[in-house]
Length: 198
Image (cartoon, rainbow, N blue to C red; front, side, top):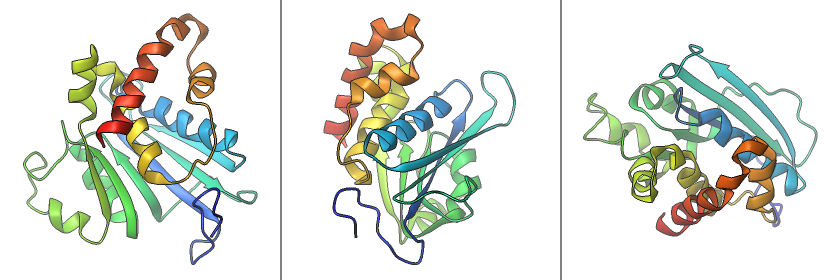
């Protein structure tokens, strides 16, 4: 195991496949970019691959991030090491791709055994490390549901074990357009709350 990155050499090689999924307007692609830039700052190899279900707010969106200690051959991942989901349709669509022992992070505002009404929620997460994150609820308490992805990012940083050394502020400066840099302080607060509350 690489003690500085949390990426281990096993049956999955030296890579970790991560998928972030939810609805358009939830900041899914931005969260994926933040994970990718955090990996880059930590000295890791990375790919980021977006996918859109519909080019409008409310449509589906997801992105795949592959992080490794060696050059990455393909941005496409069949078996996931980690899944981050913000709605039930995404949970149902992708949960079966998470390897046994993998990690699932879900926004408990919209995802959970009492919300995803298929009756199999607990069966799906059996054998997985699963983290219930109050992303949207916490974001609303901060002031806007738009910070839900930042709350989730904080929880992901804490529990993924992937990033040994990076600057959250520098990541935000890279992914946010300059016109939104005045909101960096609020975003940092949302990230901190996600980290501390998870």
